[in-house]
Length: 182
Image: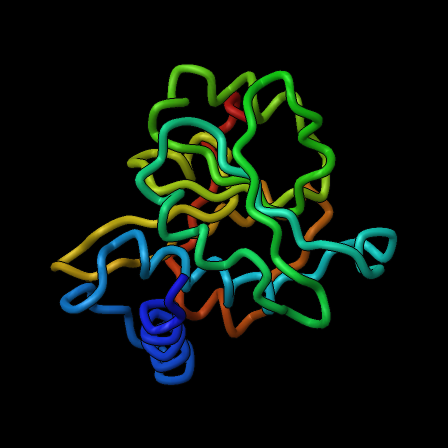
């Protein structure tokens, strides 16, 4: 597996994070940019103490996601001394083993059930589908003016027991769920 696309995505994401700009998807695919964002987002998220110990940093992908091919580039990469493990999952998997759960658009009809199954768990939920943040996904990617942008549902993050750095929040559009959808 070539690390050239991975390095390019990382440099692009680093530039975006350091300059508070959005990532332009001109030379990278949208999904490579999203994978780079996921790689860096975890550096700005604080999990409860019981989840900070060593071991693998498991990224679970639920559903049919074009993102999966780009996310495969993360496998084995290190973040904070922990290696990424990328795994495809379904409803029958033990989602509590995931630290990050990417929920594909193909799971839109099941989103409420998935989020209910992991309610109050320290699992960072991520998606790239319109309306996902409003429906309870913690981090959602969207495209605007040919750029990949980020929105964060701070209510969902708080309920999951996670803390997001103010540096990351500055890069994102903040979204909260309407009453009754929580």
